[in-house]
Image (cartoon, rainbow, N blue to C red; front, side, top):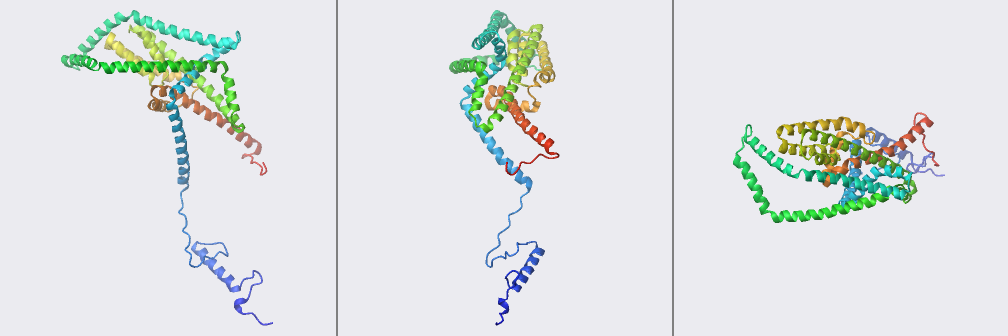
Length: 419
């Protein structure tokens, strides 16, 4: 048998010429020394440019980029939701007021249901509440009407005292400047009479919108009080089975927080109104009852509403009783603010709402910028409800993780491959 050439000799182990195997070993050694090792048997093709390596990216930058696009998506969704609510803000406000009325009156209706049928209990609760509110407003109107003549006289004398006070040291204002201001105000009112009339007519149109929202809120509250739990059960039944449990947990936590916040803020507002009314009555400031009612409604805007209402009371005290009584009212602003911030809110609201004061302040300012007074009122309960829903969703996961740790030892049990 003739002998094969050297170039055709094969290695019986791998079927390759021995010199090719030695070349591969040398190439792998060189690549290992250079730090560019390739898998064995993968030689670069001649004439093909090597692929450029991807530049390394820091893990922190990758994490930040992942969070950034998710935050952008969430922000776009929130912006879209607020845009829709802005287009239908009357409906949103009506539903919110209906929920507030439900949170306040549903316990009363539940008590009456033990004595009378449910529809009658709801009717008695709503009609009695309406008569109570209308009676309070009628009482305030009667007080203002009875004090009208005396109020006008006191305000004229108070404006004169303020002018004389500004003419004396340390202000030393020119008396002609004050009279010129009054004449300018009169000329402005006469020159812009048509604008004022159109503004009043637009205000009448706004009044119609307010009455429509109140009627819709009352209509919603009737059904919420009567069968709100059944409506929520029906809504949960329309969802996919996989998310019904979580939605139910979130809804219960959100309603519990909203009800606690509503009861707490009403109690805080009533306490502030009583303190302000008693203090103003003791100081002899006119319109004590209307100013106390203003304080009650202003207290629904945390951190901001109460000082604004008391500032109005200070102006009324300055015009009617002079700077000393006004200074006492200003001191009253500080005292009531301290009572509200350090006593009432920690005792009454801590069990329902656990938000840092900075979060409350930012929520109120953000809501006011987004939707005015309505946004300032809605912002804090909205943030509180969202936070409680998040905490409620985290509790089942934490309990499951703790159970897995307890069952499996030092680390959670891993699911089987066939599960």
